[in-house]
Image 1 (cartoon, rainbow, N blue to C red):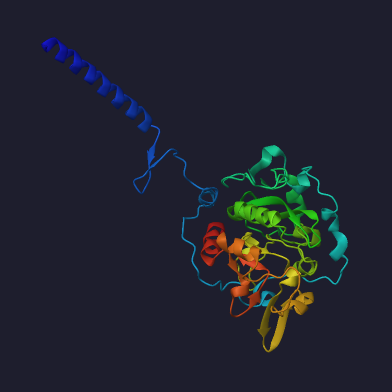
Image 2 (tube, rainbow, N blue to C red; image 1 turned 30 degrees about the horizontal axis):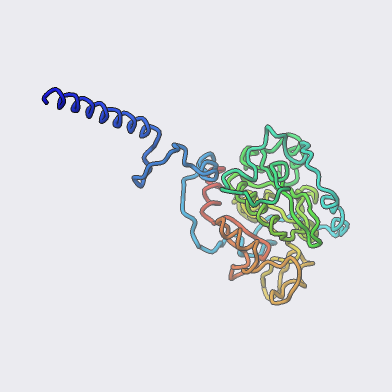
Length: 338
């Protein structure tokens, strides 16, 4: 009897030791999170958080504060370039919709080795994604030498103090009003590059019409000319008039979508300012016309979901084309570059 009890005890001890050893081995693969839960991955930072850290910004919560920086007249608050009367640009770049090419020359971005983000990155299950979407169509790259040469003296002014390394080129596909697939390209700040990629991908998958999206350098970085051509754009370096403060477009954290049909407007000394001037017929936001952005619009909803603020919500002015990062983001970037 005593012999049997001893054998059973020894077997029990062996089982307990085996269980404990197995549990310890598995637990070593997990890490403890701030809320006390375990995670199977040490790297829990999102793309955007990592990019903000790279720019030496502290992590902050987005606020709902209305933007004051660009709520005034664009003509008086920012150093705009002279507008052009050459209307030939309206049809000059329609070739981007004539046939979509996925060849990646240096002017339009970078090679596969330079691509740092694509459609599927950080995005969950995409099993229902349109089969035509690929990293050949939607990607982010650093600014290549050839592209930078094209930007210099235009969108990237001689006095620009936003480092080239903090800017990103994004390549997308978009639909126009006729349903044609067009290539789109834009330069922005790196902290919003992934957001823009996701927004434009969703717009494309939903056949949302964007008439034109070429680099603003194609218009010699002239805003009035680009807006009149209904060209959607982002980065264009400039400072706010009579200051050394970089504007949000100058930082690359503001985006204008279908600007001709979504103009900027404000009353100044009893006179209505409209930019672009050709956008005046589209000031009636109750009217029905193509490319109109309002709060029921998919474009509006996606930008708001990604933390942008809309110029159409301003009270002292209206900028229906304009989506921007909150003021605190701009202030932190400016502090970094000063």
